Image 1 (cartoon, one colour):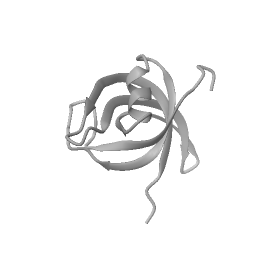
Image 2 (spheres, rainbow, N blue to C red):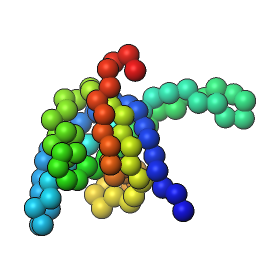
Image 3 (cartoon, rainbow, N blue to C red):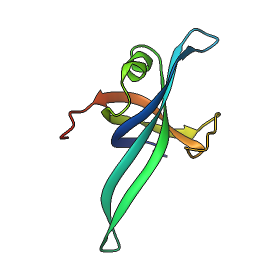
Length: 105
């Protein structure tokens, strides 16, 4: 089975850096995505927020250092979140690659 996702959007917030009991750095954030997609031949506006989690060095530090409003591209896999908030679904992206984009990308 395949579980891979790549998403662009804006970092709405970063929850700060913490460490697991094993000492692994972990950062969480919230990304907002907005685009136009075609479904059944019709253009459809898409807008949603999704939580992201980055573990390990340097990913956690990279996510933690980004200011709110930064345009980003994340790649990773989807998993169930252990922490639920009113702003996100129980599914989050576990980040394996993080790229800060230029505002025009």
